[in-house]
Image (tube, rainbow, N blue to C red; front, side, top):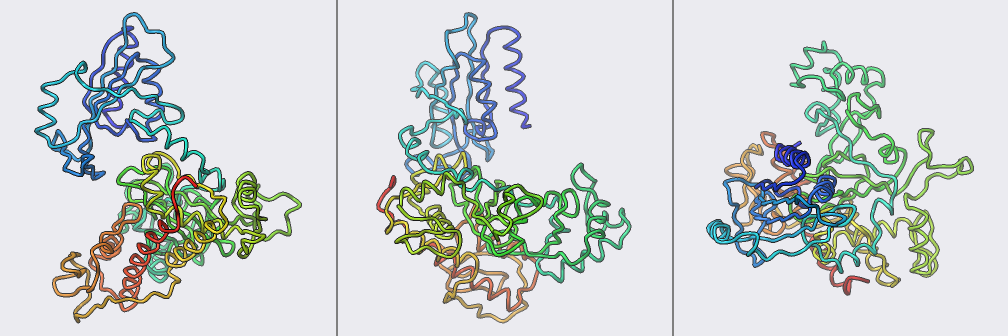
Length: 517
């Protein structure tokens, strides 16, 4: 619904009516690669004969740099990257199935970009001819050989077919709390208030189609107050909500069809995204509980893939003859067969395999978790990880598979906050413990003018998961609060966990000889 997209569409329609013409716009460059615009790109290719894209880059939101690592300025005083798009429809249509698409980059300082644009034209620009293909029809260059290699892996949605986006509350300030006690206190007050008084007190705004104050109150009254449960809200930040499972109730979109599998028994869930809007892929995290839609993604909506599926009257995942089965793995039969064939091992549902005769669902989950945290994997396939769900390459090497599964198991334990980690960090200064201004200076994380966590390495402070700078984010979300003893111990764990994660990620690249397997 961006205005620039509407203007492109209007111009496209106008040229269709005339029968020929040229459209030249300087716009946001998001439509060149963003998955959301794949239909737009396809339509433009169908209507025009030639398309020229000069990507001027300069996207500070994505922290773009020139290929040589130097600064990459925007041509305007804005954060969003910019592109020139020239779309040509000839009076006499050319014989073609779709438009010829031509692309060029322009990186560097603003003055150099201005100079280039003043001195050059479409005729003097060195264009690269693209071959946009389904399903994305990208208006940006891709390494075709590397893409073919990457596509040999299993897309996570084909590997684990039961999945959904995380829950959407529509009113986080009302529904998400840092303790069960705070959640219960709010619930009791909320349902006792008149609808309009509740709206004003909790600053809930106007009703929408999918969330209304009265429906939220009725949902709690109907199901009771005993449904408070943990929810992964952000990396290393588990909070609490009242989960009834009813859509358009207290929680706008509870995603019960998938989240129920995280509630019926012990389970693991993989959180990842369909695309990466800013930065590079770092969007993989594990959970034992239901998860919010931005638990592992600052900009993007994240999806949850449960490892196991539990029987339920509401789902069709179990046949009548499966009534005695406690749970099933959320792996497609085709994927399981591929794993068994490659490794010459028998797949088992529960426990761990011996890697001599058997391999289990948990082993595969741990293997995938290690792969998705491999810096080599993330770097090699970076351009493809930006536009679709990650793909999992499978090895035929049993020893390699087991090594990665063992490493992934350690990562999972750390990220579930179950690991026994040592810490070299202290919180040495006595004070009110109130988080005021969070700052990092000289290996110290300050929460106010005088109090700090010491001995924090810069690489730990800067480490990101899904676009979140975890150490900073956790503290900023508690601004104005006094940290308790448990809060400080939790933060100690986060610091140690991130340091251990970095070490294991480096180790994964010593285990993996090279891609492809």
